[in-house]
Length: 203
Image 1 (cartoon, rainbow, N blue to C red):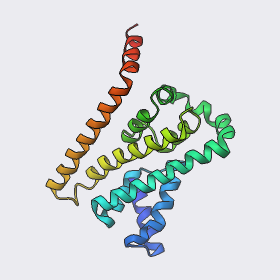
Image 2: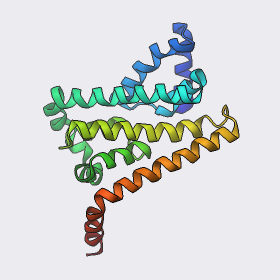
Image 3: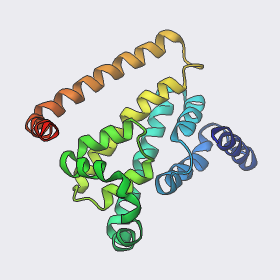
Image 4: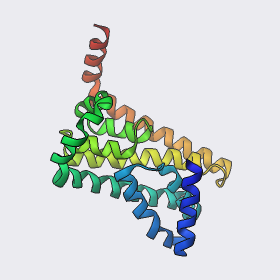
C-alpha cells in the first residue's frame, strides 16, 4: 500500500511539474486531505519534505502542515458538522471508547500519546476530539506537541538513509530528552489521577 502511495505521489509531482519548494503546492493539500480521510501514512510526506528541505526544514514544514490540517478539521467538525458526525459516526467509534475516556480525562496528554504512537489514524483523533469536551486551547496544544513528537521521531527514523549516522543519533538523543520532559510534566500534574486509575484496575 505504501509503495502504491509513493508511486502515486511521485506521479502527481511529475505531472504538475513541481519540485523544490513548489512541492508544497501538492503536499499541503494532501496533508489536509489526510487530516480528513486518513488514507495514507503521514510518514510518506515527512520523508518527501526531508528529501527536499533537509531534515530540520523538512520536519518543520511537515509539522506546520500537520498542525494546520488537524486544527482546521477540528474546528470544521466542531462548528459546522458536529451534529451530523455525532449521529453518523458515534457508533463506529465505539472500539475507541477507552481512548475517548482517556481523552476526556487527560486531554492534552492523551493527544500527545495518540499522535506520537500510531495507535489510530490521525483523522480519527481529530474526529474524537471534535466530539469530546476537550477545550479548543487544550486541543491545539496537544496537537502541536503530539505532531512535534511524531514528526521528530518518525522523521528522524524515516530519514536514516539520507542523514549521517552521528546526526541521526543526535536527533534521537534530543528527542529522548524532549519526551522525558513531557513525561515529567505529565506525572507532576496528573499523579493523583494515575493513582486513582491504578486503584480501579486492582479492584
